[in-house]
Length: 242
Ligand SMILES: CC(C)(COP(=O)(O)OP(=O)(O)OC[C@H]1O[C@@H](n2cnc3c(N)ncnc32)[C@H](O)[C@@H]1OP(=O)(O)O)[C@@H](O)C(=O)NCCC(=O)NCCS
Image (cartoon, rainbow, N blue to C red):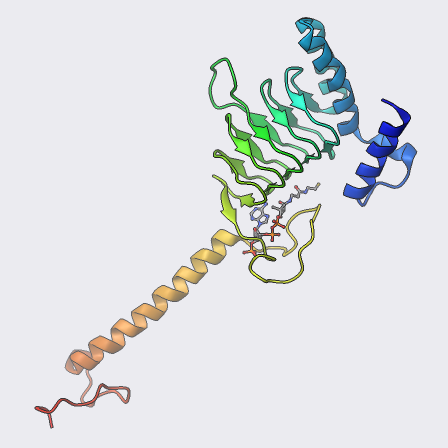
């Protein structure tokens, strides 16, 4: 790697990881960077038909860094792998320029067929820790995959997907819920769970509907409810009742 390339790499890491302090630290302590560097060489060997040396090299990198990148995978420039341990990038996967992958990410297949069976990530995609993106699907540029999501379908560009199976969610900014900024360490609203919140919302609505139904039944047949008088919120009397 050229001196300019190294500088750009260090700048990139310092931009994306608030924990990065010095150039030496970045060069020595970021196994994701080492894994990508070794991958460049193993990919070069792979493309020239030197399959076994390529596999051996990528396996050595896996042992040393905890990041497994198959030599056949295509990895773009400025890809940042943070922490790294447990990352698996399959043979036919493609990772676009500027993507950020955290530990435990799998870009895997869902079938044992030969041919394209791993995902393609566009540019500047963020994939949170532990997320799995499975099958020959496409993830659009600047998409964000939440930590621990399992993505099984194409992801449009500039969208956020979370959960298992992953579904699209609106960003707080898109809903006008406050400031937006890339949050490298993930969920900012500690403890909030969109599924639990949706269930609570559904329960609130059901409770409301039950109360309305009870009130309507009470108006129609007050005797069933032990009522002798109409409730105060009763409907106006009809002419025949008057
Ligand atoms: C998905 C992510 C990139 C945030 O994207 P964003 O587009 O800024 O989305 P927001 O923060 O506005 O969140 C949108 C909604 O998704 C929810 N959400 C975010 N991440 C989630 C996740 N991983 N799982 C489940 N729900 C998640 C939020 O709670 C929010 O819902 P709410 O407003 O109803 O509470 C981020 O949450 C994330 O997971 N980043 C990965 C970070 C990571 O792995 N760090 C490891 C460092 S070691």
